[in-house]
Length: 122
Image 1: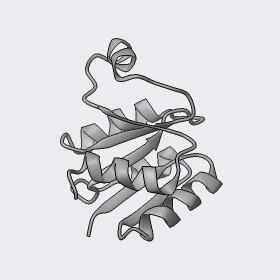
Image 2 (image 1 turned 90 degrees about the vertical axis):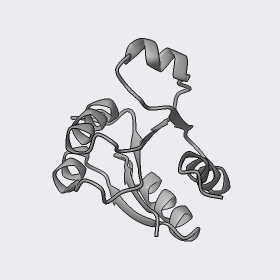
Image 3 (image 1 turned 180 degrees about the vertical axis):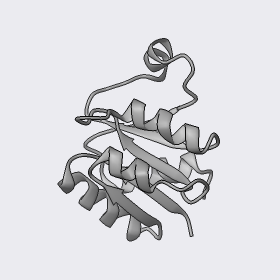
Image 4 (image 1 turned 120 degrees about the horizontal axis):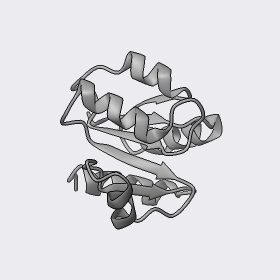
């Protein structure tokens, strides 16, 4: 079963994302505190991590870097309420290998489609 990590500081968002993904057959762990997600993170458990870009205390990019220290091959999609284009992101963070950006709000169908595409699932 495909396992997804979701980290967003807004409980209503993690609840709706978890509902959408579990109803589509994914196994989902959600966290509303990035520090807790990081402390619980185990390498090679998640097929994909969905991380909100703007969170208090630790932003999504900081969390991404800490996860990459634990698992170099970890796949990450950033969730963001603002439009972020890959080219702009590359200029700001040239060492990042993230190519997946999902703009909030996102409907369940689009979210599942985006994740399946990112993980090369049919």
